[in-house]
Image (tube, rainbow, N blue to C red; front, side):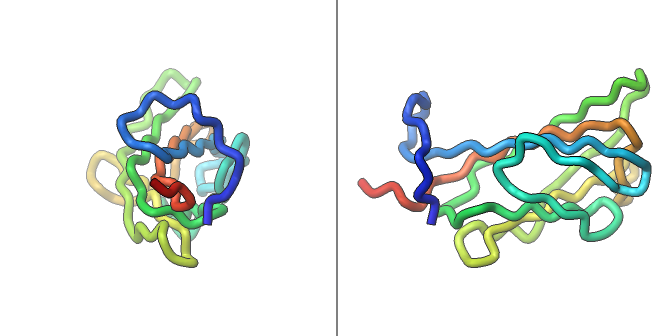
Length: 127
C-alpha cells in the first residue's frame, strides 16, 4: 500500500489525495519515448496504447490529466482516454489510449511531449 512520506500541504476537500506526475518525450513517430520525473512507470503496449503502472496500490483513482507540448508549431490533433483502470489490486495500473481526430489509435510525433498528472486516494490514510 502507499506508505511513502507524502507532504501534507494540499488544499483539498478530501484527505489523503496523492499526486504523481511524469513527462514522456517522444523520440520518433513509432511510440518510442524517454521518461523524466515519473512517479510511475510507463510502457508502450501497441500503437497508441500506453500502460501506466503505479508503485503502490491506492483506494481510488480520482483524476488523470494529460497535456501535450510540441515545439514544431503544428498542433498534434491527439485526444486520449483511459481504459483498464485498476489501482486497488496487485495490478496497480491503467492505460492511456492516444487517438487522432478520427478516433484511430496513433503514436505522437517525434518531439511531442506528454505531461501526465495522476491524482489518487491514498490507501494508507485512516480516519
